[in-house]
Length: 356
Image (cartoon, rainbow, N blue to C red; front, side, top):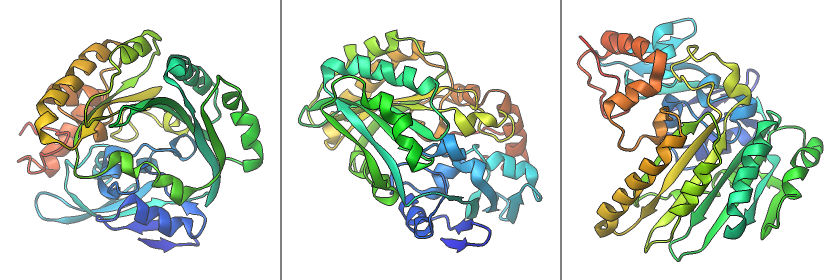
């Protein structure tokens, strides 16, 4: 991670993790908006779009990407930006790893932290539906500075709770007024919204997303909230041996929605929320049962979701689902694939299939 403080630009190598990026930038009170798990790779997160806790204020990670150096399928090293290889630069901003191996990313950083207001409230399960429904209502009129995530989890030993979490990216003095309605809601078992260290906050979810486990977690966007989706979630919400069960809603909007759908390859600027549901476990003998559980869960949930999904949440979607998710941008992505990777060398991804 190399920084240019006068211009607030950051150059990052392809092997860097979000924790590396956050530690280097936060040392100077700067941040590149990215994900929420510190051991996530910067490269994959960026190429898929990059949603995170600061996106409503500063945009997706790709909205802060200034340039890349990329080795395409023909072995050529190319520089792509708004001034050079503009078509390729458009494609790597949300088109995933379909066009080459990126060897360098250049970002615009923003002034933020290292202290901010954030945290969340925990609720017992008899308040889960009300808390989740309130989070949808609360998020509709939230300022761009406020990121809102809500959800539920069941630990491996069967402990279950609902939560509503916030990250406030504005003036700390204004945070209390903005967040107070959340603090006044319901009867939480824990309230912990307070001044926090951003680097520490970014690693708070690492243990719930650890390496070496078996996962079935997938996501879909929600554009119109139907409260019945909460009934479906809760009807199937149950503990299981060795499985950490999880779900969450994330509010889009703000800076994310202030970009046209075709300005980058990421086509979901109009989306209202993202929903992710699934689980992870350690015992491989349970995989067949729990994968089927996840698929059955999603069969019940999909009538309440959009057909679109964040490609970094790709699980077992078919090719036609990938193309449908990219919507009107898919045709342009295919043209780029034909130009830069006609043999589909880079295919172990949310694949854009060439037609030549």
